[in-house]
Length: 316
Figure 1: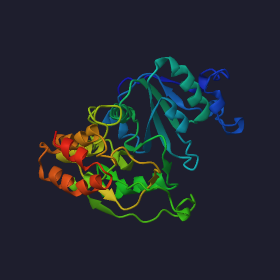
Figure 2: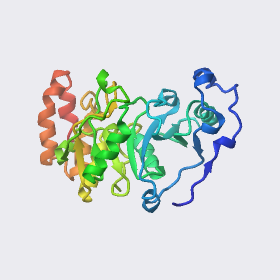
Figure 3: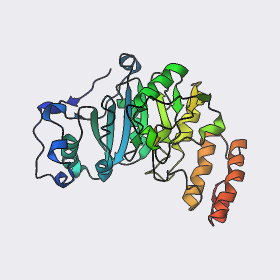
Figure 4: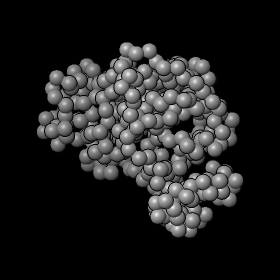
């Protein structure tokens, strides 16, 4: 492992009650004790494969921006899980305020890393580089996790020996799946095709970081001029590198909102981005996959009144 600069927050001062984040704190009984606080990372770190092989565990990588930190769940139903929060700051002056919130609201299962700037793909890459465990799962800041998520992901890698496994996200878990004492449901797997990779969202992605070495293209994703498509590009790059990519039939994350890739037609920028995504991943805007996507999705754009925008800008 290369040089890692960390702050042992167990020895740090108690967060100031004057912090502007204080009104958002949970009640005192729910706050972490001094010896169970998160570890605050001071500066980005780079962990190599040899170090990760010594820690065959799973870390959930949470990307958030500014006040999105206040939406990050504590995930109390997963007491043995590990989490890394990469928190992008538009205003560096707010760094201490957010740090105190993290110290007061998360426990020792969490690591917290604040970085300046915007760009979701940049955040994802920072998290992948800093992840200290062999296995990682990519998350947003508003995700609910299946109570058996850790066991399901770890068993999936044992069964498949894949570099990446996608688990389809759901809008909500059925009530019978919310019981942490209920045995984990059976899961089956199939090999991804290039076409099936286009349906994967970043919150579906579990990675073996000792095998998965592709990284997100920082020209794509939220916070850039091309606000989607980064998942398909990174998985396509991994496939081209020979990585074994599998898909599971069971969702382990619930995400009620609309993902950024769902609206690909309503503005010129969104239509252009989708076309450029296929160009970046396949080498041509007129590849068979790009043309198939256009023909399949044109009726969707027409249904929502945006066919002209989609058709005019998709191939630009």
